[in-house]
Length: 325
View (cartoon, rainbow, N blue to C red):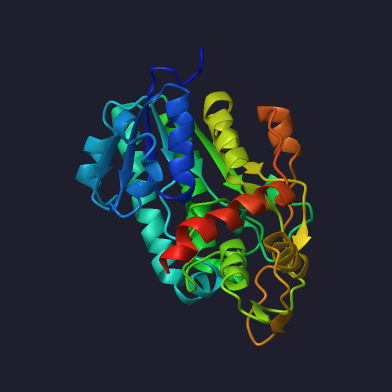
């Protein structure tokens, strides 16, 4: 029997990019799933499971509404987040801090009141400083300041981890913390001023931009993880390790932005040139995940490579996004 079978499970942000995949996985595991969302515009992601879940529209900044939402739940995954790509994050540090921190406070307070059995706080690799050890171990999550282009978001996620630790200490809440690295998949946000690097580059390449304009000099590296892997890691973390001791969820793959754009061009079948706009910021110089702790504690290893995952995102964009633009 699945650990989640017949359990009442809340997924905040469950209609969104990662949350919708987690919701589908929980339904497959026979959980009784409730999802929260600020708007109804993303319900299309849950068409396949809409009849099997409860969807509640509310603003997580409304504490009384959150109390009602969490009451009666066995487990909570807190995924709801306000975030964009490098341009948006760099331009809206205060917005990102407040819009992420206040909902987290309300949800964790409600979980304490409702005596939720297990809680997973979804943090981010954006907590890490600009120049961490590579590959980066969990012990460096509060070293120095977060990367400047992710300053508000990085501090919001750090404070959410502090919330998890203090609620565990004072209120004995069984709460785990995971730090996903750069997640990619179909359903991502392809809007130019909000998108992350993979959907942004896929849009430019598939839309025929030539040369493709890439922010920075292309030298920064990233460690991308496909959504199916990260969802599996989250479910394992809540089940097996509900302790406020952060665990990285990522892959051992490290790829430069320069090589990433060339790989996307190759997989898309285009013959496109690339131009690097060095007047724009690079972002964090390197990002690679230390995966040893996840393997040891959760038995978790990512399975899907970029060569396997990227074609799925390219195909999704061409079939479901590009045709509508």
